[in-house]
Image (cartoon, rainbow, N blue to C red; front, top):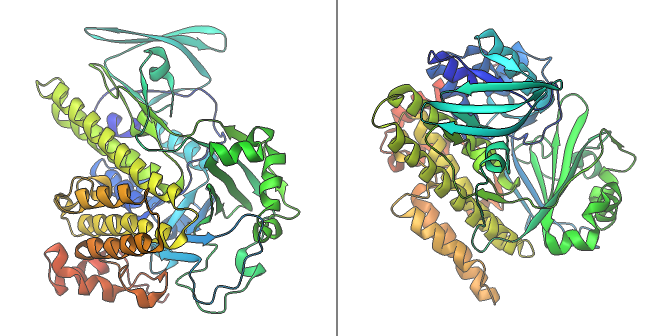
Length: 501
């Protein structure tokens, strides 16, 4: 955001509470995230950022910046306290590929390296960077905002025409302006516990697959789902693995999340496969316990300030929704600052930004709440996940075809047909009493995603393994208002077909 505003010709100060490199999670990108990153880098002439939008260009140009290969989304279902049974029918797993090969794959961002690189690039563009700043309060006036705090025990006072807050949930402006906090309707109270590790084994080493999956199952955002929560495992290419658990308050209390490492070991003791995977690993830093995971600010913007989506709200790491939500916000704020700064339309633009941000956070919370409600019913969980993958793949393809108007919102929540249908399906997911209720919901999910399905997600013959296949895109060309030739040109331009070197 700082780099973009600088490219627009403004003087910019970037304030950091800590000092780079520093630990941070929020690490797993998605196809839509990388496409947004690529678009922003192209639009605002940020070639150093564009290089990090794909695994291949990242590794060719900056192998020194640690990251992980993310070929897709891997899900496994477990029952706490029970050994995993053989799953030849693949009923307890879901693999959704995100790319056809490594070269254009998504990535996990090792934030210590990634963020430090971005700050360095911002400084190269003329952004003034100040770290180890502790802000105490803010004062608004008709002509600007004054931020007051300390750096190295010395007073700091900064006057700005506009402030963009990227300090995360319950961040600086939310606290300093005493903004109200709201709750997401029908959303469970959840907690998280996480750390970084070394020496974590690969799942395909513990249990080699009997069939060829769409991608190596560990080269992904790996989700281990069980009643009441889930574990993420993200591998980086520097020997470090990010892993943690998000769970309902009930399960977190049973496991005593506040105990940190001991709680993690208790959980692994209930999951034999993960216990084997993490046996003998080394923890790289103390565990972080987040006692309140979800968050929504009651106010998202003011006359002279705005919260990025990452500071306006947070739901859960499930499905890696944080990056696309925030990058959509960056794009919208950039557009407002580019076209409406000092114009009569500026305030209206900010209010529309706040409305879109709030609506997308609510849409995401409805999806994640439905998934939490069905973590004990994996067929329903898998079907509800397809709502996300259908919306995400349709949105990505529309944008690559230069038709962003077909998918302007996250999860297509304002689509005239898909949006209301998705909302009703997710509401139903909380009230499934019989197997027939579940089967009916699953059938309806497939029915409603079919008009937007460009990834073959409705094909039951794939038995929960969904590759990225050009045939699916060609067969779906009419859903996007294009022909076979236009689809072929798009696939060629984005590097879909790997070339033999």
